[in-house]
Length: 84
Image (cartoon, rainbow, N blue to C red; front, side, top):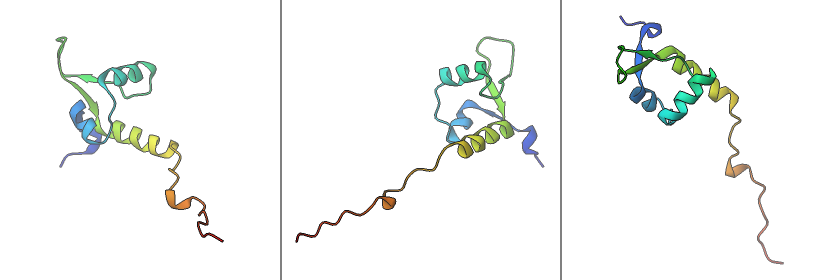
C-alpha cells in the first residue's frame, strides 16, 4: 500500500493535475518560496525533477481557497427587451 505522503511525481504529472505553468515560471516560484522544493533524481545537470505529491495537492487546494469564485453569467441582471 502506497502512502500519498511518500509519493513523488514529475513535472508531467503536475501538469496532468491541472497546473499549467511553464518550467520557467515554476522555477521562479520555487526560488520565491511559492512552490514546493524539487527533488533531483541524480547529480547530473539533466537529472529528472520530482515533487512530493501531497505538497503539490496542498498548494492546488490553497490556490482554490484563495481564488474568488467566478461570476456566473446567469447572475447578471436581466434587461427588459420588450418594446412599449
